[in-house]
Image 1 (cartoon, one colour):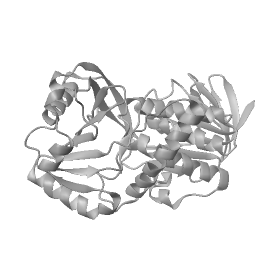
Image 2: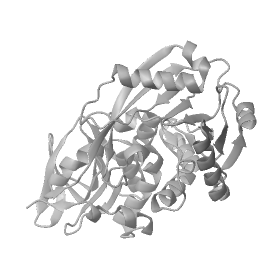
Image 3: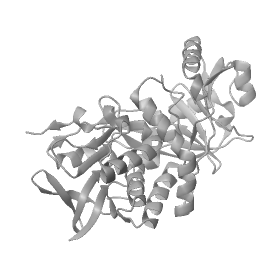
Image 4: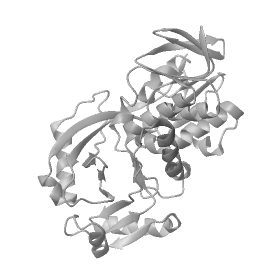
Length: 371
């Protein structure tokens, strides 16, 4: 039976990040992904890194997001150098546009509360000066200069390639069928290609971690939330910042497209694009930036985000079981939280150092033992 220090189940941005941080510590790591890297939610994401302008700044999730955001400049340069894959990190800033008086009041209060993080309230004239393509009638906006975006499929591939550079073995197209256990000790995994032993197993399979939890006799309440998203050619001239109004955001990518996202639909495991979903995104995009109405439609796609009842991720050891860690349920923030999750899980496995940052996200708050 082949063995590794750690086996990671899942090849999205969370699983590949964990593999990278563990391999960088010198551990032997094997990652199994049943499909391809970033084949599901990670590949469908717009790649926004925006924990500041949508937060109240007073919760544990905010602190986790801020720490993770700060890691991106150095980490993406490191990944590009080690892997040859460019995650396309762009510190573009985010401009949240206020269209109503209620939004004006909300954003002005948020700018005052989080001024130390760079948030600034801009008048309607100042918003239009910053981004002239915005529609007339904008009442103002919340400017967040520290935030930005990456190209999420390339981020997952960069993590994986850099992990491989450190000696990790990345296996795609290999489903994991279960765990190898001796009472309360996890000893490895069973795959379609045979059994693999490990000193530790990390279950980071996104939405499908709910089924992995059943191998432990646990119920993990992860719910699929469909996000439809599309891409248009950028207008000429284009805009530089991420633009965000209501539930719609526009992310100008380096490949010359604008990513328009995203719906938030609780429709089970249905990954279809629908006429209603795409038409609503197109209408919202053109209402924000009228020039987009004349831009070429590139393509549309959808992914299933893994949501928890409290909308917070699940990160940490499983009570009563040794040798296994969960890292899932990141909902709309898997890309943003991938660096901090990878580092925290690696610190836990290598040094038994459980970061206080994840005390609100430990699995025990949600797991229900199956009798």
